[in-house]
Image (tube, rainbow, N blue to C red; front, side):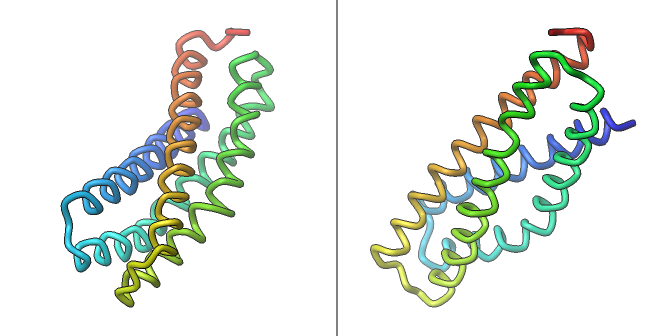
Length: 146
C-alpha cells in the first residue's frame, strides 16, 4: 500500500510541477500580462495539490527507504532533501512573490529575475524527481536491486 501511495503521490507532484513549469514558459512566450497574472494565481492555487502530494511522497518514501537499503533507494533518499529545500526556500517563495508582482502589474527586472530563478529551480526539481521516478520504477520492478 505504501508503494502505491508513494507512486501516485509522486506522479501527482511530478505532473503538477511540470504543468507549472510549462505553463510559465508558454505564457511568458505567448501570453499577455493578464494571462501571466492568471497563471501565477493558478500556480498559487495549485500549491493546494502540490504541497500535500509532496508531503505524502516524502513520508511514504521515507518509510519505504527504511525497508529497502538498496543503492537505488539510497540515491532516491539523497535527492529528497535537495528537492524539499529547493521547493521550500526557492520555489514556494518565488511563486508567492511572482503572484504578488504579476497581480500588481509589476513586470520589472525583479519580476524577471525571480522568474528566471524559479524556472531554474523548477527544472532542477523536475530533473531530480524524474530521476527518483526512474529509480522507483526500477525498485518496483526488481525490489532486491542494490
